[in-house]
Structure formats: structure tokens, C-alpha cells
Length: 157
Image (cartoon, rainbow, N blue to C red; front, top):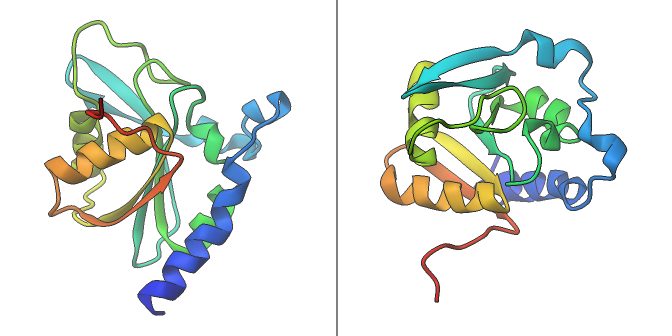
């Protein structure tokens, strides 16, 4: 599949991320959320889910309002085609709030090391997009593709 085809396929999955009515805040993946895992990060732990076994790894980084269930509408489709990971950032969903300073990009790097992913497409929504941009700048060797959905851009006056 060509690079353009892959990008177009990803873009067709993203419109459902624009609006989440309140009833969508609950996970709709059945017991998937009960079968997630935790990874230890500096001073805390992160909840994550993993699915699929395609050759392309995709990491979904949620916004600053919802937790990883924000990706429920696209999760099954990504799982059909890619090795996909989504996680609850500190203080969201099943991941405890931070008790000390930390860098969200370090958490993401720790998660990827834990699941043995060395190259991935990173998809970030809103504040998750800002984290994705910063992660790409910090770890260009890991990021194959960067997809931003309404990303917040830091460092701009």
C-alpha cells in the first residue's frame, strides 16, 4: 500500500474523533478496558491497551479532556490493520494523577520501550497532538509518521 493510500485510510477514520457526546465517554469496547495492562513510569504507572498484529505500529495519544476511550470509534478499525496502542496519560482514565513533575514525552517513550516498539506512526488529538509533536522532536528515530487532529502547538506566542 502506498504512503498516500495509508494516509488517506487513516484520515477516513479520524472524523469520528471530532465530537463525542457524553454517552460516548464510556468505553464501548466491552471488556477490553478490563484486559488492559499497566507499565511503570517514573513515580507512577500508565494504563494501556494493545491490539492487532499488522506490520505498522500505531500509537493513539488522547486529548486533554478525555481518556483513551476517546479512540473507541476508530479502535476496532485500527486493530484490524495495525499493531495499535492507546494509553491513559497520567491523571486520566485508569492512570493515577502525577504526584511530582514529569514529562509526558518520557512516559510515551517508556511505554514504547515496554511494548518493544522501535518505529511507529503517532496519532495525537488536541493536547495529545502537542505531546506527539514534542515526542517527534525528542525521538525522530522512533516516529515514522505523525498524524495530528486539531493539535495544540506549544511555544507559539
